[in-house]
Amino acid sequence: LYSTRMAARRWDFAFATESNTKGGRTGEGPSSSSLTKPPGFLEHAEASAAPSSQTVTKAKADVAKLKSKKAWEVAFSPASQFMMNGFMLWMSGNQPNIFSIMITSYVMYNPLKAIASNAQTFKPFNDGAVDVTLQKICFVLINAAVFCFGVLKMSWLGLLPTEPADWIAFYVVRSSAESATGGMPLGA
Picture (cartoon, rainbow, N blue to C red):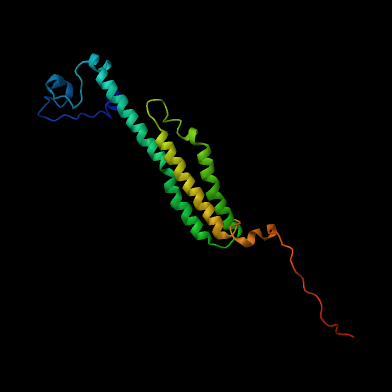
């Protein structure tokens, strides 16, 4: 009997001091009503069960503000990826080789994919309480800027036909208005 009682009390801690207890046990000291209540403690369960309409309205406003803040974080997330992509493009160099072409294609493909999945990206925030139109526009504009940087890199690599020499096959050769012939034969 003694060993089972000791085993049961093995992890029993009493956080009481001698000033508020008689025999070292919390149940033997002053009643719990004489202790001060912690901050935010409600006296009756009915008060915590039925929050006021003002509290509910404030909570909904806080949730809407939090959703708007998170939507702005998602809208600006491509800007942080832009720095990583810019570093990758800089490290790949300006020579058209397989790695620079692959990295540039990656930089151009991901913004297009993000723009195409714009509605799915902002679906968790678009519940009617929060208008995320401005965040969507910002998201699309940042992704478009990243895409344009990829197009610029393609131009630097010489993969876009931007020079007149790239279009020489389409130039029309004009027929000459005059032709000159004649001269002395050398063998006669």
